[in-house]
Image (tube, rainbow, N blue to C red; front, side, top):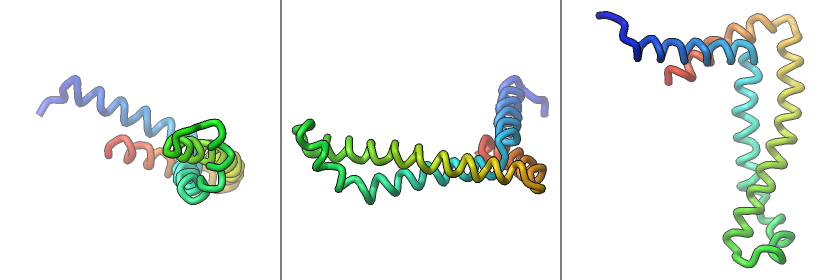
Length: 114
């Protein structure tokens, strides 16, 4: 069966995704997903204490709750991302850096295929 133009394009995108993940490393790729999940969890569990601070400025209660969740999410994402970036840099600079990058390549390819 011949390779079509679409097949070539999909293989190209898969290789680009794999190469980008290899440059970043497996630990950074996984920790970035963990950062987003942690920020989402923080927004879900900790938005209620922020609502009273936004209520004087936003009349609609649902919008105030959404804004509070958004604020908590952004702050948590920034804090957790800084921590995970430092941790990922430490892993990449360690003796397992080559393994981390190889696993990053495989992760990037699998991510693109799925």
